[in-house]
Structures are given as C-alpha cells and as structure tokens.
Image 1 (cartoon, helix red, strand yellow):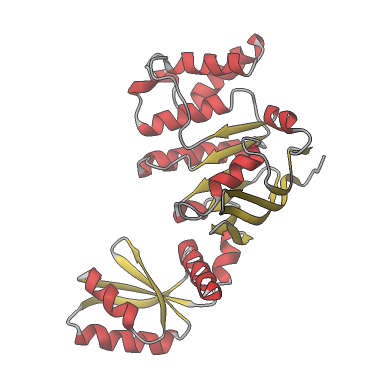
Image 2: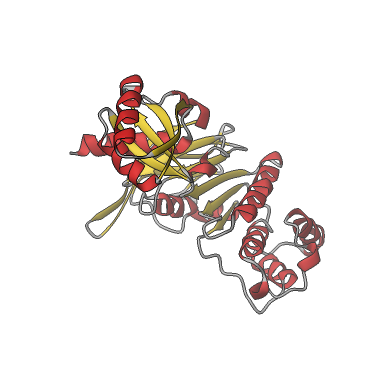
Length: 313
C-alpha cells in the first residue's frame, strides 16, 4: 500500500487496430487530491481513465490504484473505486431515491449503512427536495449530481469522473465542483477529465494530454509561471478581423479567443505589441485595450500543444 499516491501509472499504452490512443503515459496522483486530465476530445483522456478503472485491459505498462496492481487484482481495484462515465446510466423512470436504492443494491451496501448514506448523499448533492422526482425529469445539472451520488453509494476511495460537466450550464458546473471540494475534504481522491480549461485551475494538479501523450503535469500556478511566452490581451471590434490581423503580426506565436477578448502569445512582447497596434490601426480596428496580462491555464496548454506540433513537423 502506497501511502502517498492513490494512483501510480507507468508507461501506459493502448491502441485500437493501427491507431495509438495512449502512448507511454505516466501519472502520480496523490491521495486526497483533485487531479485533472486536461485536453481536447481525442487526446486520450477517456482511454487512460478506462484502463485505470479496469474497464479496459492495459495494453502496455503498469498501474496500481488504491494500492492494488491492476494486472493482478483488477476486482480488488473495482471494489475501491467509483467510476462515472460520460454517459452514466441513470434509470429515467425511477425516482431519485429509487436510483440511489438500486445502486446501493448493486454494490451490496448493507442496509444499516445505506440508511445512513442515502440521506447524507441526498443532502450532500442538494437533492433531498427532489428525491421523489423521476430521474428523467431532472435538469442536466441535477442528473449529474444524482449520477455522482450513485457513484458514491459504496464509499469509494478513488473516484474517476470522465468529463462530468460536459453539456452542463455554468451555474451547475460550479455547483458540481463545490461537491467535489467537499469530497476532497472527506479524503476521497478524484481523477477528473475535462475539455474545459477553466476547470483545470480548480484542480490541485493537472496533466495536459494531447495526441495520447502527457505533455506536462504540475500544479496550475506552477505551469502558469513556466510559460515561455508572454500573453497580450486585446479588446477590439470587430473581433474576428482583429484576430486575423493578430495572427499575421510579427512575433505572434498563437491567438486564442477568450469571450470578448483575444489572448496573444508572443516571445517578443514589446515588439509584438508595437507591431500589432500599428497593424490594427491600419486595418481600421477599434482597440479598447491592448495590454500584457498573467497567463491563464489555457494559454499554457495552447503553448504546449504549439510546441508539440512544431516538434512533430
């Protein structure tokens, strides 16, 4: 039993036919942390997670979860984890309470224990007032909270959440993360995958994945400090034309849209700012502000993937 790490993986590899989905992935997930697998669709997050859950056999490499070797004790691992897939199967005709009771039966939770856990999970997920409502009539965010409650009914040590907030509105996403912080305080280790870069900042550690590989893993604030480029924030109208001009400006490495602003990565911030200001003025763009800012986690990921693409060319 490793007291430091809930998940240890080395050299994870998986391919389907001739397509490599995961290549040489190594992870160290400390106990009691919320650890994020961050990356776009197709990065290898789901395949990595399914291998660590024992849903898929390891194609290569080794892994231990909750102290048990996945190659030799897969069933022991499954008893100690909770896994919420992208399409968690709730029963729409059953009520919230009936779904929880069903999963308690499925995991063979003793009746005395479930009598304590079910009310706790209902309150924990803010579903007490909706326990008699059919799951099919819940909002998207409430369905996700019910799915999480069902995943927690057997008190797992390690929780795997595969893009749990995809398609959920921003308010429900914040509420879901509030619940995850509560789990962390209770000592549960959470490995969560997400395509949303803003959620990376909510994790204690993040691993950036792209094309089946882990590019880097560290605390979000450390990653932000290690960004080799500077970031310029541009507020201008019309934004799309400003984006086209920014991409063509000298010294600009990448341009990303952030709501109503542009984030511009450059390793020559002073020269790029001057050149960009001149190009925008010549293009008739109305500039509200152009300034250097601290990088976001998404800026770091854009830079990482840019350098990976350059290395592969």
